[in-house]
Length: 199
Image (tube, rainbow, N blue to C red):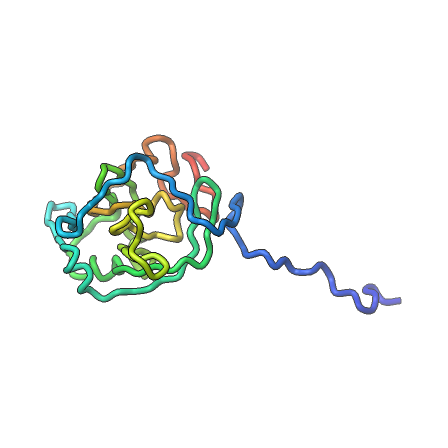
């Protein structure tokens, strides 16, 4: 007698997309901010990378837009447990912006208009994994979602993708940012549920 009955197909595969542990799928785009939404005119906006030696590299809005643009389609995951899949952005890769910058730094602190900060290992901004994004789903990035430009680091929880980006400080040692100082995880990998310190 056979072990498996004729016609047995096993357990059907789930049609649900794979999500990080503890996350739920959303179709909308929740707005979550640590403070009021700053309004940054494009004619005064600038983005500055500052090395650990104090050297500065600056781009105006027109200079940023003149750089090679990429259009990543990525999933994003918020520490508040929502995930949004297949989002499409346009922006400039951090690989492009860091190219030619002489640094021995291992860490970065993203800095926002409005005072928000978040820390990341510098290697997480390289290798085609991070962008200064200014367009979402084919339109200008709305201010409530970080426009005119935000950091986009989709492989980490979304608080690491700093809204209203104005600069990145390169550092030899790690320094916690806004939420990290309040107890959030220093790294924030959604697949390892690194929400809070000790996770």
